[in-house]
Length: 274
Ligand SMILES: NC(=O)c1ccc[n+]([C@@H]2O[C@H](COP(=O)([O-])OP(=O)(O)OC[C@H]3O[C@@H](n4cnc5c(N)ncnc54)[C@H](OP(=O)(O)O)[C@@H]3O)[C@@H](O)[C@H]2O)c1
View 1 (cartoon, rainbow, N blue to C red):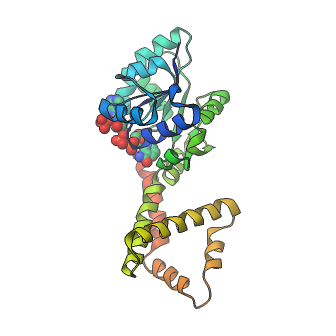
View 2 (cartoon, helix red, strand yellow):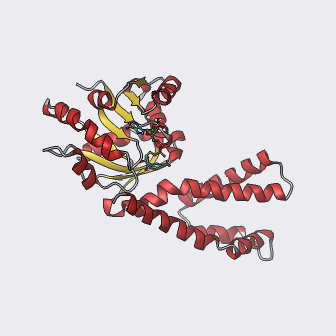
View 3 (cartoon, rainbow, N blue to C red):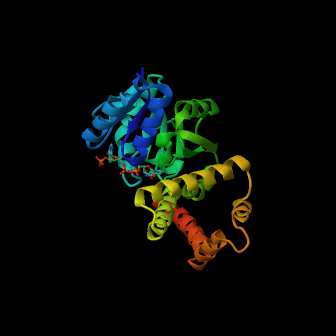
C-alpha cells in the first residue's frame, strides 16, 4: 500500500517547483522525492520537510501519484525502468497514476515505453515554474484518467496556481503558451529594466518597478477580462510618453517577435515528442 500521496522522480527546475506546491498544499509528510543526483533531492527535502528515497522504483512503490520530472529524452529510460514496479503494484490492486510533464511527449508514447499489458491511469501536464509560488498555469490533458483522479490531482496541487483541462491535440501549442512564456517574460523584463537603468534608475529599483508593473498589467488582463489592446490604449495619452515607447517597441518588431517565439516553441514541442 502506498505511503505517500505524491512522489517526484526528478527534482530539477520544474519538479522542484511542483514539490514546493504539493508540500504547501497537502503537507510535506505526504510527499516523497528522488533525483539522479541524490544531494539535489536531499537539499529540497530538507528545506520542505518532505521525505527522500534513493531510487525511482521506491518512489513508485510508495506513492499514489508519480510525477515524472525528467527531461523528455530521459523519460523513455525512466518509464522502462519503473514499468515492472508499476505492474507489480497494480497487480496487487494498488492504484498508480503516472503524471508526465515532459514537453512534447504524447500519452501514446508514454504507454509504448511502459509496455505493460494493461494501461494504468496517466496524466500529461504542462506546468510552469511560477507554480513554486502559487502563480503557475498548469495545463492538464486528462484523456487517460478518470475525472475523479484529475480532481484529486488538482486538489493535491492546488497551491501551484491555476489549472485548465484541455485536449491533448492542443498540447504542443498550449504548452508553449504556458510552459515557455515565463522565459520570454523574464527577457522582456530584463530589457525594460536595462532601459530604466540607462535612463538613470538604480538597478534594484528598476527591477522592482518593472516586475510590479508587469505583474499588475497581467493581473488586470486576467481580472478585468479586457483585451490587452484596450488596456494599452487606456495608458497611452495622445502625444504622451507611453505612445512614444509603444512606437519604439513596434519599430523593434516586439509583437512579431512574440508571435514567432510562441509558434517556434510550439513547433519544437512537436519535434521533442518524435
Ligand atoms: N523548466 C520549465 O519551465 C518546464 C516547464 C514545463 C515542463 N517542463 C518539463 O519538465 C521536465 C523537467 O524539466 P526541468 O527544466 O526541470 O529540467 P532539469 O532542471 O534538468 O530537471 C531534470 C531533473 O531530472 C533529474 N534526472 C535526470 N535523470 C534522472 C533519472 N534517471 N532519474 C531521476 N532523476 C533524473 C536531473 O537530475 P541531475 O541534475 O542530477 O541529472 C534533474 O534534477 C522536462 O520534461 C520539461 O519538458 C519544464
